[in-house]
Length: 423
Image (tube, rainbow, N blue to C red; front, side, top):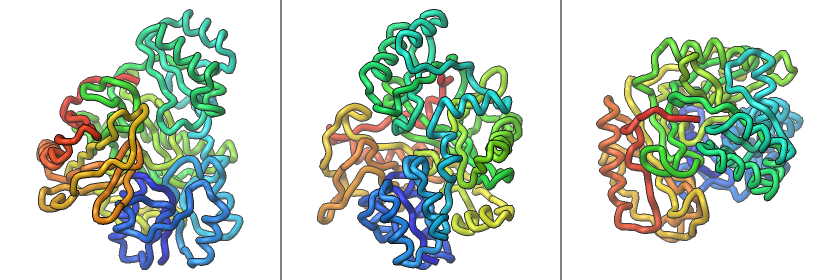
């Protein structure tokens, strides 16, 4: 079959690498792809928001399956467009993707269906939001309602930080329309984890849980980012907590979306926190997580395309997982998640396999015989080993090649300093 992956980040490169293993795949395309993806698939110069052009390409090239990586085209209705054109596509329709596209919708939905989450209030008026925050006190969480590339969340430890976040979002329009409405949430304490599942209507097929590190610097310090690394599985996460997350969160969410006439087909991502009252939802996403995908898909024994075909056909894909640990650490441009320079040359990636590692590209492009940076998160170095410690050691040995450069940085404690995290 001919398969098209939409997107240009690390998640999409990981999907492409997994699909490349499939005996069902004949020709593999990516739109627009990136420097690393170009080594594994044919990149097509169509952006992920050019929905009509993507549909036309799928028809011209007889694409049998299109798989959507990022959230923006899902929120814009790419699945609706493709299905109107009778093109096979994997991902939720626009009406279902709202579970990620609007945090206000998601919170109201969870409240309606008794899905455990933090208490909250929604505001469009800065003065009213500030009055509420002063009444509640800090720590407290402020979130932009819409899509903000994983950066529209402020975990305010002080009242001053919280009030400043309100000004950034509602007064200064830091996130544009995405921040014209904000959700102010109760602060929850505990360890975070991510649980993704293939979903079709009421049917829910969970993946291996992963833990993502969102803070920019070691020890979970610094600003929130799109994710600086992840690992799976999670040694300190009990089977009871995982089962609770499936039965009390994922299944009720899938069923609730059916009831709301927003039937969800695709990958439902639950960003969760393990509290003293059990797991609670921090956020829902309508697609695979990034960088969680990069450490979960390598552990999947199944053929990814066959899984997608089975899920869409109403069959149990019978997911099986490697008895192993996978860790991935992100290399980012100096300055990320703030301003950073592009077009910085990367050291060679040769020798990764010999060192027991794999490399997933995100913000790269190829110039001649080398890669240069074009994004904030540049790439992820990962390793699969029987034991987590061996995977950590392999990753950090490999990443030493970046230590001589002032242009990049990476966290040195992914999966190592696994202290209590807060959200």
